[in-house]
Length: 305
Ligand SMILES: [Zn+2]
Image 1: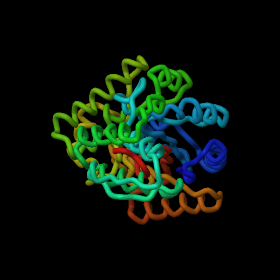
Image 2 (image 1 turned 120 degrees about the vertical axis):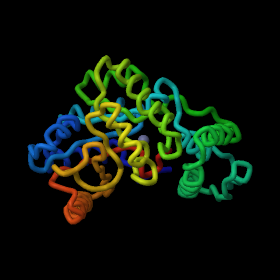
Image 3 (image 1 turned 90 degrees about the vertical axis):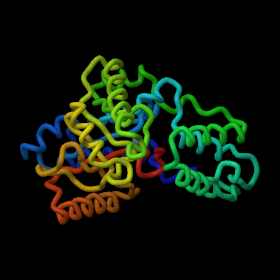
Image 4 (image 1 turned 60 degrees about the vertical axis):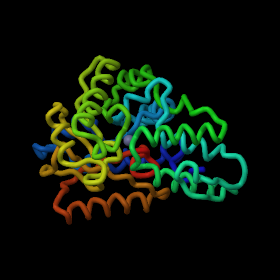
């Protein structure tokens, strides 16, 4: 259903390009060097969001083989058998019997389902409609959709706690990404703080190490988080945090809102051109020195919320 998402071959190719073009650093190290202006030229960091199991089974061996470090931002509440609501919607519509979907009982539209492209459009439309609903409603509706499709909500999409330890032992950085991946702006401040703190604590217990990095769920300033959450993240004692606001970080960047950018092109030239364009735009906006942060994950595309 999602031919545009990278597969193993494409991801391996992208890693080779990144290795050839950039000085890839662990994000925590980059965040230490950035304010002092001591980053190497063409610095980049690689990040993954949410805590999908294939980060461990598929991406980790490729990263290890290429010798590149990465940071994994994990929503702790889905470890060990959980499923994010958007993945329950995808599973339901993928399995939906027949050639059409009438979402009226769920407050959703009507869509044809005659092929994979149709099903993908239905998924995207339903996720867009559900994304900013209250978290409990959204989860209940996603589970109701799965039940109506007569499938079990997938329990093997997300990492196990042992998977987190495997990443950590392999020298990868573990970052916090809240417990349930809420839209922080939709929560009262106390709940937002609780999500941010508890997500981190669980990962610290699992890894036995301090967790110094945070990624805002969905990650767009003004839409998904705002200055209240930046303050909470700072007060909670994180060293740095990343958004999904596109751009490139520089010595003047706020460490609590580092930009990230997803180059999605399949071809080398297009991939390179998109990176260059991002950097030029960031420099024009006065936010960039050199480094880019490349991310892989679902936020900004078919993310949850
Ligand atoms: Zn996320």
